[in-house]
Amino acid sequence: MSVAAADTIRNQVMWNRLNSIVEEQAQALMRASFSPAVREGGDLAAGIFDLRGRMVAQAVTGTPGHVNTMAAAVPHFLRAIPAATMRPGDAFITNDPWIASGHLHDVTIVTPAYYRGSLVGYFAALVHIIDVGGRGMGPDARQVFEEGICLPIMHLVREGAINDDLMRILRANTREPLQVEGDILAIAGAGEEGVRGLVGMMAEFGIDGLEPLSDYVVEHSKAAMLRAIARLRPGTYRNEMTVDGYDTPVRLVAATTVGAEGITVDFTGSSDAVPQGINVVFHYTLAYTVYGIKCMVAPGVPNNHGSMQPFAIVAPEGCILNCVRPAPVAARHIVGHALPDVVLGCLHQAMPEGGAPAESSMMWNPYLRGERWFDGSRRAWEAFYFNSGGMGARPGIDGLSATAFPSGIRGIPVEAAEAVAPVMIWRKELRPDSAGAGQFRGGFGQVVEIGSATDGAFEFQAMFDRVDNAARGRDGGGDGMTGTVRLRSGATLRAKGLQTVPAGDRLVLEVPGGGGFGDPGRRDPSQVAADIEDGLLTPGRARLDYGTEG
Figure 1: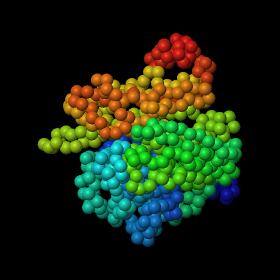
Figure 2: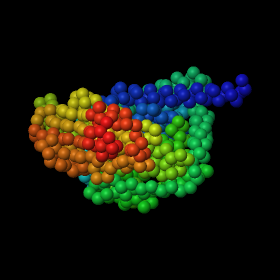
Figure 3: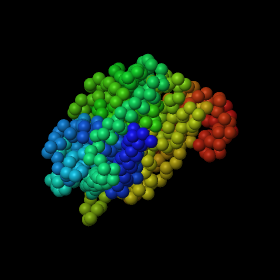
Figure 4: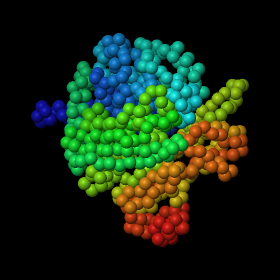
């Protein structure tokens, strides 16, 4: 075996080890977390960065919105805190939306890694914490200052000692101090776990630094991405989508240019920023746009600094996809999660044989709020969990039902949601007829019914879309069913904003379905019959969409 071949194998083995280390970091974070969103849903990101702040590897567990904003955030930390001033045992924190993940509820922590007394890299991790004060997570604020406490980049841990003043401030500004403190300490602990893994690896392989390995990872990932891009048809492809917005529709416009050096997505022409908290900071726009490209072009290429280099994202300052401080941004995911579908609509035209899935519905995450007796006094509580709609159908296969695309969040079990708040989930089932018809049908949404465990009233923040604008089908496929928000007693509620569920009543969410792909007339009749038998398709809808009752 040649020296070059041996070096390649060695680098690949070390690269795989880095992937294992960051996944162990993520799993440690989940096991230590206090909140169901992190512990059960995997609403997090974890990764390792070289001395230049380049993301070398990311954990499989996590969301693209968190992973890719984390990749953009770490260089901000390195500019704010010079490496020469860092010490072993340090950890740094921020939740600034314009530096990190786009809203105040996401906390990013960076931990420097030392080996034999020298700084060799950084571990970063990010989670969504339950509450940061203010109005809470919802779209009603008019400025980011109303949405909670903002932490500039600062020390969370200094040479092993927790910044107790910072933790006291955080506990005083949240409705759920135990969960918030527990999750923040879990992130810090996971960073230490990553450092331990890296030190062991470096000792095992006899290396003194990460830079040669990170150069190898970045160069090979970039080359692999460029080879994948070369399979596309060069040119500029356009697509647009309308989503519900807060009280007026929001238009998302994209021009995607494919060239030899990479892909540029330009969102010029999209709606301006709005007064409510559905605006998107540029990091979050970049995160989900890049994810949409990668899903279509090169899903098998590892996600890191190198594989993201061939992408350029443009969004004019002041538009809803590049809002300016102090715009409200708490519910930025409502618009941000639509971006992969916008990009997929462009790339469907660039692929030699098409191939992009139909549009998907979105996550519906109600933030629930109330008061309960705790330790002899009435205390505020806050809780939320994920409800996913149907994915769009793909060429050759039906869409996945009740699946969180593009976030990749796992469903939170009913029991876990009920364990942290005085609520009861009376119903959680797939929603019949919600999938868009097609040769390959979309995924089904779901129906969720939530009530108070004490029969008292409670409030909820609605952050739901695709109530007025359905997930569109592709290549002749039908649109998915739109969603509805209502009380069990019958009253229709708004899809966005803080509202009350009266005592004795229940909140009912009918989550949208995904779009279908291809002519419904070409669907296998046995598949139609199977959906009817499973109770997912009513005979009347089957006759309307497919010309048969099974």
